[in-house]
Length: 220
Ligand SMILES: [Cu+2]
Picture (spheres, rainbow, N blue to C red):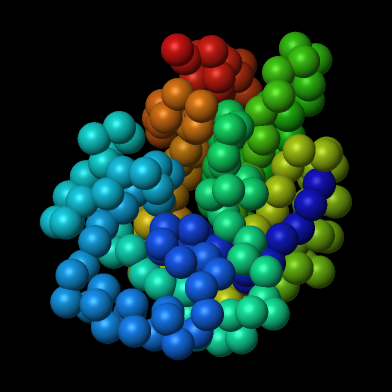
């Protein structure tokens, strides 16, 4: 298992922007233009662009405003992108958890582990992603311990970061809630190669989830 922090969610926003590595001054002047001319894009399909808010025609997710990379040390911080590092060219299943949850997160995570084991047997290459909905408590260390407790194997990435960044990510994925205790038991399953995305109930049986994941993975 892997635990990734902050830059990921940040990277999602960066990845949607047009200027991953332009110099600061240029970025600033383009930001002014961008304010007048808002553009919207799908978090899962960065190539879907629109001048108006709405839904992605491919996956139905709410489009979000394309933001430029924040102006903090743009040259020294490598841009790590939720999309290009974790989603691009892959089939993925994403769930939403927090480590101090005493209700649905333990069964959600245990189910994910079963799914990972069963998928491993079939040789399917599906990446699992667990995003913390409580990033201020869920440090990378805490997430690591949580992942270890559930025996998360390779190909399963746990994501946390600055609260504002994670909030932005959850909003972009359409799963934001005001109270972490109301977080969704939904799993997002997507095949980036075909652009096909679906959602399913995360506490379904592992067999049901595997069937859904396999369908998405083989989606043409
Ligand atoms: Cu929970």
